Figure (cartoon, helix red, strand yellow):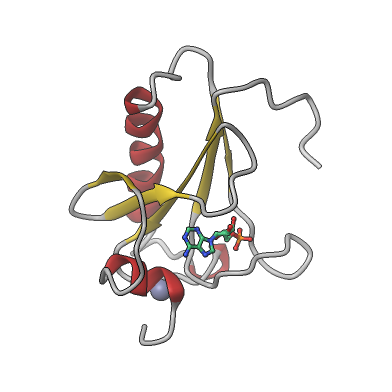
Length: 115
Ligand code: AMP
Ligand code: ZN
């Protein structure tokens, strides 16, 4: 999508710090980290804005995103200590970028509470 900030990152029109990439997803450091490690995983193609766009035909990409999260936790060396994976969808969740993504957070104890 022309004006989507994450599409611009995939096209390298905006710089990012790559953590992982495969044929389906791109993962990069969040510019405003909320934990020691904070990585965003996005599909390379803007096929979903948020979870409301998931269908039986395109849901394989969610599996690819979680597969990437596993690979990222190994790359960061935190697969044993653990990660928290978050998706924000919509207004109440304060989703700011309408290109579906998951936040992969780790490298520290992130507490019991989710909100
Ligand atoms: P969300 O609020 O779930 O939509 O998350 C969007 C995330 O994108 C936020 O955590 C931002 O810090 C992050 N973000 C926005 N612009 C950039 C950028 N240019 N590079 C890296 N992360 C970004
Ligand atoms: Zn996009």
